[in-house]
Length: 249
Image (cartoon, rainbow, N blue to C red):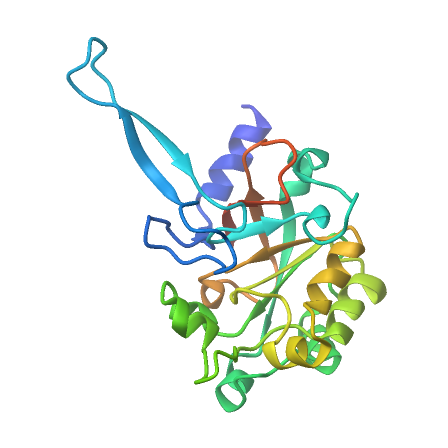
């Protein structure tokens, strides 16, 4: 018997958890994108033509739905999509759960202490890991107002990463990527203080990857799972929607 076929049988007996939101023409995306940039499943060749088939076209922003960001998204001259291969799409998965703290403070930014508490329970973050931040925020999808949690003046209010936490996972540990359920990397209060998405800019400047607007992280164990973040081989992309999933025992 062929070993890889047997390995696949074993993997298929595990739990497979979808970490990507489904998308349609009403799905939200960043308001700074010009209007008219989203058109999914447009029929350009319909049933009843000389060839009995259906053909569609798709237009969408790179940062749409559950999506991956490449370093060149924020850092001029750094890597874009074509510089990542198949082995860059699979990772050991770490899930840091701060959802209870977010219930108490909508602006909560994960701390180094949170991550050290995780490591005390589950062991060190492994080399090349994908570190996902579970805040419970994906419950707001696909309501853009709820995802952004706007106040009366249009300010955003949601949890996220802190600079110190990202520095820990990327410099003390050698994570390959990180992800979150919110629309932005930075906890909104920290972004407001910095006047910039400083956390996102930092991790992309390190040549790391991130996935935004994830879901179903509550269904994944804190440690021991693997995940895939798969994107089309479109050259020159700063970001692309991903089909992301985890495999857990």
